[in-house]
Length: 126
Image (cartoon, rainbow, N blue to C red; front, side, top):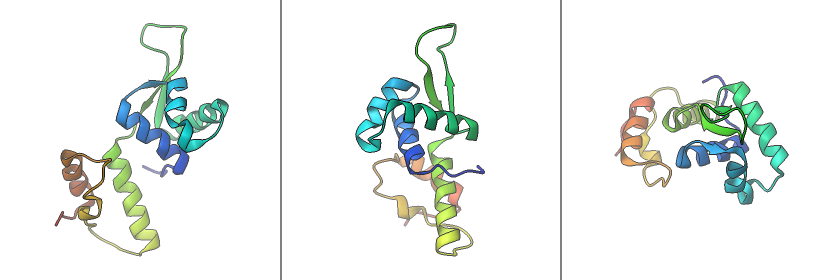
């Protein structure tokens, strides 16, 4: 992953990871309280995210009209692993395996996702 999602992009990705593919309007409404911006800002952000490869925006299969849907193209665990490596490496200057224990207690991750993240980070959970 060459780009790390910025905070608003992460809000949109978290909604897509939790709910799956959504009509763009529904995604905007789901994130409206946290982002506090217009629908056009959500659309523009999703366009930039599509350019970065974070999301796919398309019509439902077999449909030529109707609302566009957004779908995450990046996995939650891979994205979080890249973000953790970026933070620990750039900010804390840690080189090597990272402890997945830092993510224990997260409401964002299931036990299976924590195990997957542990493998991606090369560290263990204590």
